[in-house]
Image 1 (spheres, rainbow, N blue to C red):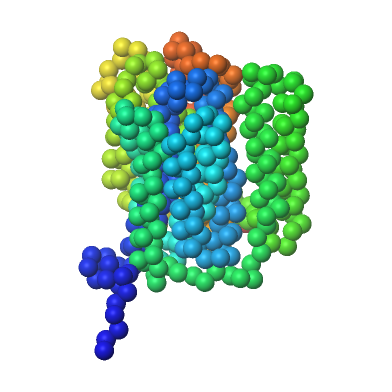
Image 2 (spheres, rainbow, N blue to C red):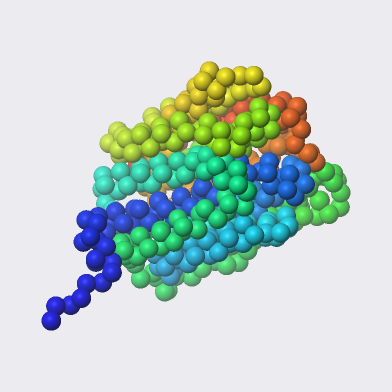
Length: 477
């Protein structure tokens, strides 16, 4: 009697999709759920502020409660994947993410909303590094470059698509922006399990996980960011603000001390001897700070100053989605064949031009002559930049360190968003504002576009001087 085919075999036979492509689909859906939740919330901020009577500091906590744990624990998520199997940790993270998202949707107070956002970030930290590391196992050669390009394109699109989805859902209630990701999380778990034979790994039971380092960096970032958010209102000289700020800096210093001395560090500091690895993460930090700031403050500008509806504000960024989908896979192939430096530098510069063009978005301005050209330039820049950057981040270290490389780069990208949300409001004069006044937002938005363009220019300079002509170059100088 022939052996009965498993449900995963039947899926492969029915749909004719190779197992490796099921892994790609699951990876995109899983990481996309995490990334879209990072951006979908931006369009809901005015509604959340009105419902809970929040000022800029309250909104910063809604954003940073998520970004804090996501950025601080991504390295731990990658280490847990290496230790216990990337596929399994990916699945656990998605289940936790779905549950936390539903908790956000029913939160009756801002405090409980922030707590649920913290849990969301913790779960997302298990998903993101393992989603990309799964592709390293399931694909090889040029197919890997194309797969990473598709992952990067859809990940960036999910970030940019967030405002559109959020705008559509906020029309009913801002709470639906948190419900919408649960189906993606479930679908991602199913898809990766269908492709399990292409990507499964037993993990390394002998590996040790640096829980002490993870605790130090998480609490350190929490203290530092907390001081930056509370300082403008309470005063940076206030004893408790000073205490948490100094405590945060001390714990971050302790993190470096711990990483130098433990046998199995969460972040082996010697990986930064690679000029290419250090350079790609430096570029990520400054450019992703610009990306996050543009999306955050553009949504506030369009809704609170120009009186766009939530769905109109979200739809205004559709050109970015289309350009990312169309050109990111091509940019990934170009980087594999011709080298990543040129598309990364060009992409940073074009995104910087797009950021400056957003300065023209002000009351009375036409969408076609202001928002559209800016979004087009910004989208073209991201399409050139994101896929090559992702490939370099993975290729700068040995293949057996794919989980670490993915974790570091994704942690830096989320840390960029965290710092942008905490620091840029101070730089543009909105720190500590108790209400979202249109005149303040309009003046602050112009300053934001200049800051973001400067960050993009800095990213181009870092890439030009540190990124080599080969993705796999490991320059230790």
